[in-house]
Image (tube, rainbow, N blue to C red; front, side):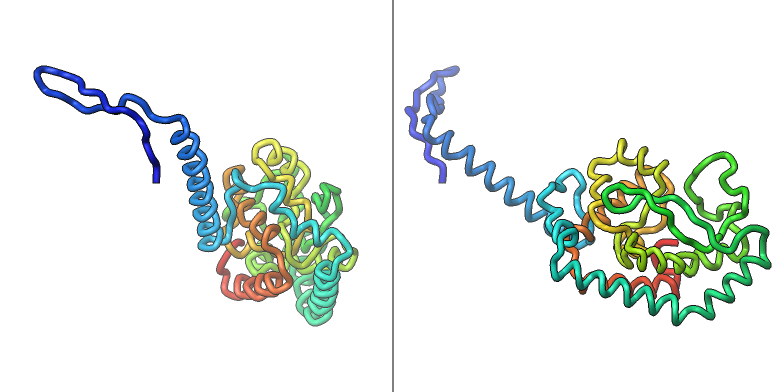
Length: 272
């Protein structure tokens, strides 16, 4: 309750007497302002939390360094980091071993479909902003980037016939199991981006560099929650999901994302 301690003065206007507040005590102001500020902050925190819970994404403008605690635990020699590494290695081995026949068939199909190598390496940015070379099945024609690096587009003419299928089912990403075994990637994490795009996006989007506080992944929360995008605004929106994953990481969360990735690959629900 706010208490106003002041005197009322009688003001005559056109024959009518009006009671007005003449003064308000300083003590009442100093009591009211902190109360209002605290209530506003609590309301904003509740709204932020409810938005995160409903949509599984964070507000980039409200994201702070304190929200990177889960990422810090992964960077240290903690039980959580050990569990994630064990899951990564086991999942990568199973992926490569059990899908070996599919990998062989894919390699033959790529070779018959278009000229060029079956696999290709591409420079990406990993943890702590360090570059590494990612392995992928080639899904585009050989001269796809003769004019320089550019994002893939919907119905991109550079994609080969086999490339359309392996990109849709994510078969082109399977060779990245070797990146996991080499310790450059995790099974789940923000997708690694190319240096040319990272430089631009870090200038345009606050907290974009925070994606690099954890290892990049073959799949991620943004990949199963957001469609593929080829713009700064799209990257800004996907970052909200990446930061949510970093903030709320747990081994069970990783398992959930892996299961949902299978759904994306089999039914095409999610990003391409």
